[in-house]
Image (cartoon, rainbow, N blue to C red; front, side, top):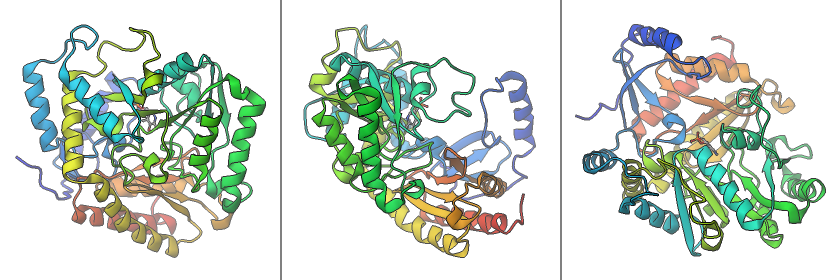
Length: 450
Ligand SMILES: *Cc1c(COP(=O)(O)O)cnc(C)c1O
């Protein structure tokens, strides 16, 4: 029974049954767990989320870049059903199974670089980042980790320290883990010296930060998202990432790419690092890898990953067999359907539409950026003044939601509207979603919605 790929507005959004469930949520779920759009989902597939009131919403969020192959993707469903009937858990550290190895073999094949690699599997992105830092410190015998402004690496204690943004991720949750240092991010749109100067000046600022605040020989790793996710889909200028990676190599510092959001076909390559031929020492992956099941990985140079003592890495559920089966099926789908190419086609369809909107509202669209099916518009109130306009992003978001289009915002200033459609979405839904966004934007920018 496949879900019809059409938008249906059966009730107001959210409808009465969703509102009932929302009341129960408030009474049972911690208020600390927020909800962007309180529409309760019953089924989902392709580019559609169907809610408990019979509404069918167009999905431009993929559950935050997770359902790259679509929800309930056929190969994933089949693989999970087979695996769940065979066995659900033994703990890989106790009595292992082949699926874990197959995922690690696939990671070795697909992640950047043809060197010998090893992987370890975990449950969440934050857990993978924590483990990448553990491995880097253990291998180098050094403590310091350098991260960047606008970075997002998770919500656990160490990853909160690595994440830049206070509200909502860190506020009141300290004290944080030590030996974390922050360098300016190469953010062309907001670089003080201008976009042209950004690559050189941001490289110099990075090198100065490590030299002056850390000391090269104290630095275990530099950790970066090749395109920043939650921080605002910030794409560094061409050449900057390869220079940072090369400088790290020259100084015995491990270069860790956090590809949790960018990885697995999302940006039009298998990994965002591929775009400029950057080969990280370690890569963290999660989100899009397993078709919605919780799975994460650290993949890296064999000598680095094998430097850890036996038993130093692991966890009860890490590399759960059902999640591994889902990942193998999701990756097979990405290969069979050439989803990196699909991401590039989505970029080609989106960008002219977004440019047309920007041309009509030059004072409100500061920048269009991103790659593949990871695209964003940064909204401002005053064109060249670049004043972030989170209120406009919120108004557009509400107007889209009311019309049955699920969207997300992001950015340190909350003013970035981001697009992360499932790569399984059809062209008709893409174009209909863009029509809704366009109308919402026109109305909000002219003050017609609140
Ligand atoms: C989502 C994300 C994380 C954290 O992943 P979780 O599975 O939520 O712990 C880390 N890094 C990046 C770049 C992410 O986008």
